[in-house]
Picture 1 (cartoon, rainbow, N blue to C red):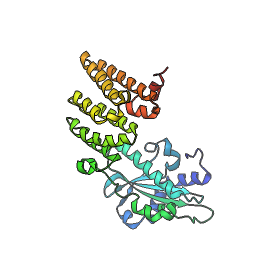
Picture 2: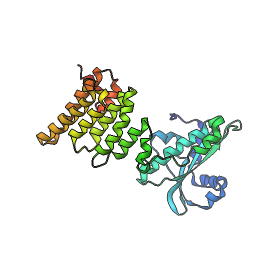
Picture 3: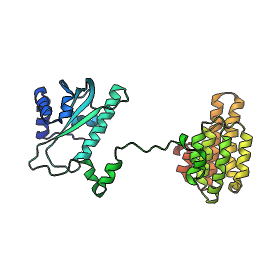
Picture 4: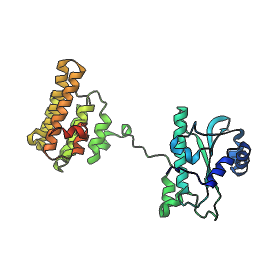
Amino acid sequence: MIKTRLCPHDRYIRSIMSKTDVVREFFENYLPNDISKAIDFSSLEAQKDSFIDDKLKLQVADLLYSVKFHGEPGYLYLLLEHASTPDKLLPYRMLKYTIEIMDQHLKKTKESKLPFIYPLILYTGEKSFNYSTDLFDLFGKEREFARSVFLKPYHLVDLTKVPDETLREFYWFGAAALITKHIYDPDILPIFKTVLELLRRIEKEGDFDYIYLTLSYVVEAGEVKDRTKFEETIQSTLSETNEEKKIMTLAEIWMKEGYEKGKEKGIEQGMEKGIKKGKLAVAKILLTKGMDRKTVSDTTGLSLDELEKIFS
């Protein structure tokens, strides 16, 4: 929460620590040796309103300093947090400040290199500070597990490097993975035939929402060279989902009335109107069949307000 008023302790510390000699002596004595040796203290500069936005102004203004670090200006920030009352969540608060400062630095410099921030807490409370300053202690019994995964390299699942054969072995995730992996193909139909085999299994489970979402994504984002063959493939493979031609309606209305009628007019505006008309028609059918509005919105790309007007 942003403080709206500083207590006397904060006011004094912020005022006194704005003096160069004071803050330099403080850091020279309390920073770790390896950091002190890499710092040019003559370059110490307080970061005030020009750097900190309103969200952080009252919390870290006058207590954030930039220095040249290994000869590079502005890539080391010394964050001094003043605390006058014990706070168990102080390590978490410091983490939030650090992330916000990094965010502000990126916005200011327009670069992608993160700054190094060294947080240091000056505690001036009446009683000793007896809480841990280790962020991982806040995870309780899971501290060691958190330490082993938090801020480690993120687990990246790069579908471009996963063989199609592997993705075909999946059930629920497999269809979505194959489609998103190949959505930029010059023609989506070859991989779509494989995906339909998975969709047929999902069809038997009764999850038609999954099928609508997938088909609408293919129609909207994929490149379909032979639309007639595309529709025929859907109709022949997903025969059980043919109640009132729900799936075919999605494909036919969206594609034919959208893309084809738009193309006949030969203008972009006509194409957009055709696509919008197709989406509204599909949405009406899906809503009539009881699909919830959030899923219909996700499927068609129409807003909830636009869906409200369908039956009005």
